[in-house]
Length: 257
Length: 321
Image 1 (cartoon, rainbow over the protein chains, first blue to last red):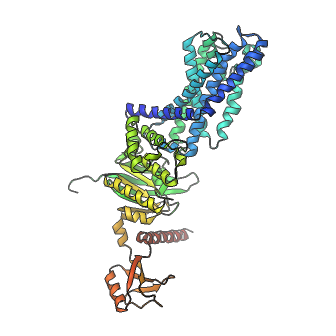
Image 2: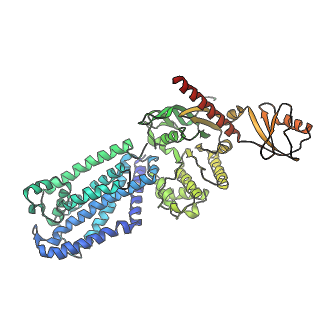
Image 3: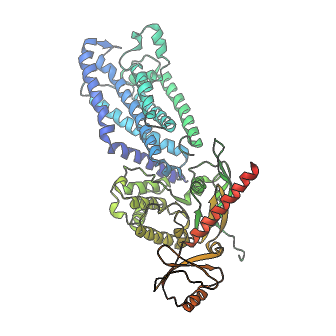
């Protein structure tokens, strides 16, 4: 395929993904907006008022970056895992497999689709947060790079989950039992300085901690970890997961007999 | 050939497909389909038809052998092979929630066709297949026949040179089946090579010029339809007579019997000709009002060949045991 044809194929996959999540907006766009608003009201306003400051900022300001990141992570992942598994289930994945689109373009298209949803919801949650607090950006490039790379990373995770899944249960196991606990324990609601030494060390092996703190550094200028280490970790995970996903596609894991 | 090189739309050599449990779905088949042909791949359920077409269309990984589409080897030039190929699978495999027009234009996009051009091509094929009025309908709302036509439109939107159809008229009513035949014949006349598998042997006899019969993962016959039909040594005709017959007449040179409906069935051997049969009937004072073949000719041959093959396989097994 020519570069022009590849670009058209890539845009087609992305457009299809965007069309999908906007078509079912009550399932994709509305729930995170409602959930995050509740977080802002309950944790930020009601409970946060009694907590006081954290990391030198009031509690609402402290949790906003983490909540935005949480929305980006869960929605990037959810979009790709549900869309790709649904295509496998309905066998409409065969439309792509019989076409000349190379595997890397398929992967890139789905990741971009996941990012489109994750980042849209990230933006939506950011706008909602402005109704509760004021946000000043400390380091804009850091904010943009961290959120884009994190969204790409979890889109890749969703893709691998979908490739491995054989039934609908399989696409909810990882988000429920891995992603949600890691996100909650990744410093969204607290600074790891508050934890005993052992749990501080244990938290350092949670990759989501680096992403939440990298993003928080970009917005507030405070972080539990070195923000450049955060970026490095995200890039390493992206390369690793992309290699695994491409290998799976080449072997036709779960999609070719 | 006057120095002209024969172009093959599809060349398969030594194609093998084995599964982890040791089952061999394809045992090294060879197949050649000429450009412009209308070709039928026939065989009983589980013979290896869909596996063969699955490998050609990249939905199934092969174990061994080579496949070339218009000279492009799927191992070394897969992208070029795919560009020339349109596939209509046996089962519905589109997103049930998407609109008809979106399904067709998205498929065009996968082939690198820009949206504006894709819409023109989609309109052309949706109109030809009578689906243009349904373009904004979610695909799940379509009838079975419409869904099948949607898959044909989707397979043609990038104008492939080779169209593969796996049981294209399964579950389709007679009227629609005939209109699909006309459409496929028109596509073939315009130069598209067509390969189909079908359970309706009447379909293969009406449409196809060349035929391969596959059974137990092996090609047991690969020839022209005419040559194949010439191998039919005896054909049975059903004759409706003016006066009901009490018993079958003793016609010289022809074996006759009355069927359950009281119609006369006459077996005509190859080379006898129907004139001799009618002279005999005339001599016995029997007036024929209408006549038809008892079974589809290709069907008779197909059943015999598959039965013969089963006998050979059975003998082989006995020898091995």
